Length: 195
Ligand SMILES: N[C@@H](CCC(=O)N[C@@H](CS)C(=O)NCC(=O)O)C(=O)O
Image (cartoon, rainbow, N blue to C red; front, side, top):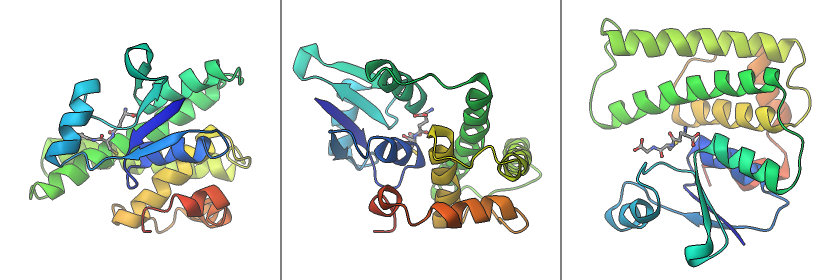
């Protein structure tokens, strides 16, 4: 029995909800910044980050942290092919922009103003700009034309950026087209964080 713990707004969780759309599993929707759910999460996962996967029940359950490791775990469990090194790099690009945006989002929710003269914000902005440009080029090179796992992750990143209004996507036309082309997939609409 597979149980995925997460939230409906996290882009890291959404990629796995989409990936597991045709696999029997239970989704536990946590409010990770609220006391009770936080305690429940901490009891199993001291990183206190979502997603988290549980395979099995009680003491016999395998508990896996981190979306990347969860994906590898699922790949091994269902004997799916591993990602290529090129796809691993695509995932690293996506995750690095995603991580920077998550950190800046948490800071803005902590009333810390994004001061571009400060090293922290300079570094994150530089990374996000460079990575999104590179991903835009890769989409232009047709590397995301099939709906493989990196495509799912890329979609979740772009859609989360739009949902939270985190970055001006003007000019990143390949990314915007890629987003539009995949927006009506059933597993995408079913996991829309706006619902
Ligand atoms: N490397 C992790 C990142 C997961 C992550 O950053 N999750 C966010 C939600 S989008 C989180 O749980 N943040 C809680 C915190 O930073 O305290 C993964 O791929 O699963």
